[in-house]
Every structure is written in C-alpha cells, then in structure tokens.
Length: 366
Image 1 (cartoon, rainbow, N blue to C red):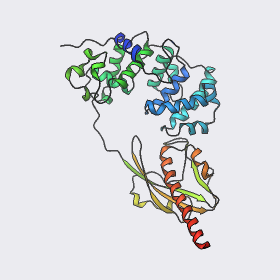
Image 2 (image 1 turned 90 degrees about the vertical axis):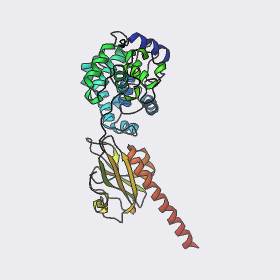
Image 3 (image 1 turned 180 degrees about the horizontal axis):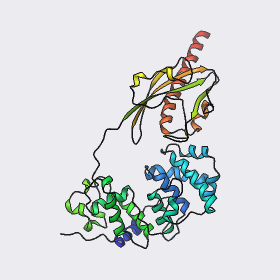
Image 4 (image 1 turned 120 degrees about the horizontal axis):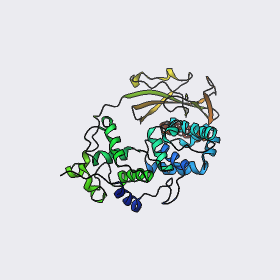
C-alpha cells in the first residue's frame, strides 16, 4: 500500500503541543532574537543540547547582544568557548559579530545569501537563521532532519550519497508559512520521537506516512556509511614548572586544529611510534620525567600524548608564542579539553612532588 505524503500541518500541530523549552527559543507568538538563534546554532554544531545550555547561558550573561560580543577580546571569547571543541567556530563567532557591527550596523541580514557571506556561517546555519529568526522559506537540514526524512521516505542509501534526495524530500514538505517553526518541529521530532535507536513510532504524528515504519525497519535508517579505521597519532607534550611556581605555556598558531588556543609545548602529532618520542624534542634541556600518557579522540583521528614534566627550572622562553603563567592561573587559560587532561596529569605530579619535598624536609628536621 502506497504511503500518503507527510503533511506539514500535522507536524506543526504536534509541535504546538510538545515543543521543547530551550533557552534560545522564543516563546509561542514571540519574535525570535536573531542573536540568540545564531549563537545557539553555532554552539550546537557537533554538540548536544544538554552540553550547550550552560555555555549559552554563560555567553548570553557575559555578552547579551552582538555589540557586546564584537567588543570582547578574542582571548576572552576563546576562554569562554573552552570545552565546546572546534575552536575555529569561536574565532569565526567573534569575527562574525565584528562583521555585523561594521557592515550591517548591528543588524543580522535576513537572506540566506547574505548570511552565508558572514564568517563561520555555512549553508545549514544560514538556512536555520533565515527560517527561525526571520521566517524566511528555507530548507533546514541537520542530523535530526536527515534521520526523519530518510525514514519517512525510505531513502536507503548512505547519507553522504543521498544529500540531494534528502534535500528534495525536505523541500517537498517544508511549508511556505511557519518555515521556522517547521524547522524546529523537525528537530524536536528527531530529538524526542524519531531517535537514533528505538524510536517512539506510536507517538509520531507522521506514523501513518512513514515508509520505514511500514517496513518495520526504522532502526535501519539512515543507512550508515561503511566504517573506516580512525587513524592513530602520537606526540609528546612538556609541562615545566619554574622554581617560583610558574608554568610554561604557549599560544597555538591561529590556523589549524585548536588554532589560537593556549596549551603546553609539544611535538607535532604524527603517526610515528610513541616509543620514538623522547625529551630530546622538549623546548629546553632539563631532567624531563615521563609521567604517563593522555588519550583523546578527535573527529578524524585518535591521539595519544606522552606527558613529560620537570620542576624547579629557571624561567626562560624561546619565542613570543611561549609564556609563563602562575600555576593557580592555568585553569583560567583558554585550555581545550585535551589540554585540561594534560594539566590534570601534570598538576597531580607537581602536588605529589610537593608532598614528598615536605616529608623529606620534615624527616631532616627531626
């Protein structure tokens, strides 16, 4: 039996009753704030709603509007972003705010074309802002929408091969009016009902239209791309503490992975064997001690860092990118989550060394 086409009004009626209460989402009947929509959409890329809520609230409290964010220092923005990952987004966020203030007098452009010309705003984000903030007719497709659409229409090819089919199917059912509400309804449906595993099909307003449900195989959609082995990289990282309690740090180049963030001196991250990594690559000669390894998984490779520490050294640096920070202030730096792991390992070592020194001094005094 042929499935009927999903009707936008059925989903919008469901959305009006069950919509999620999110801090960046305007209440029913209220006009959305473009700044809130933009900020949340940038934060939500590659991140989940529960993680973003606290970051969003903190950002909004510190920089309530685009003018405030544009005036902020790049370093402060990077610090506030630490932990959200993909740090190029934070740099583009700041650059975009400055662009809007300079070229648009603090007002967000309303068309997809103009929005896409702004730093850090790609096709999806431009469509989302245009639809949600300005109720423009735009086709908004995120991961939730892809899942809903592939199930509804039984699109049985891997997502990366079915982008055009997914776009056409989404365009087919996106209404001219309430496009923003429809986009958010699709996101809520994917998050609350049409979940990746064990979807609650009986509660779905489109259950009678869904080809995956009719086939009894909703979990089979979307079709997954064959898995490839994630490359493994290694490196060595060096945490030095001076005799006066300062920690050597550096600022990474503005371009590339973790660009513009603060971390500790390290070797390049390569695919060579970790056993080849030694203190010979440290920023200066010292009795470096291997104190353990730290592992971290990025989107396109896994990393193992061999951590070396040294204590009681003189404060010296090689170039302007390296600087010394009081140990208590390290936590206030713009440290990505990987470097937080490294610092936790090093801080434990320094704490143990301090306890040992006190114990030795106590025994000598007796």
